[in-house]
Image (tube, rainbow, N blue to C red; front, side, top):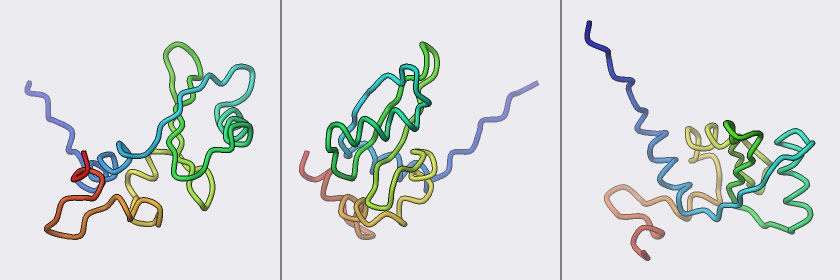
Length: 105
């Protein structure tokens, strides 16, 4: 029996491309919950939004968070709803043009 391919959301793919141009930080959660570790790291390092935090929970699991002006969000939510975040609109291209971040590479 043929296996069906999972349909990829264009909106999420576009959000993922936009998030590629945001600064990324990788940390270990240690004893804290991943979101607590992310918040402590942001506070300690004085990270300004927008930023993507990759929090390693254990050797198999990494949680992804997006630090925005409005707070800390799950990266998957941001990929799907990138148009709601003003800091990502700068990286977004108007229809028919390349984005600023891609053009400057």
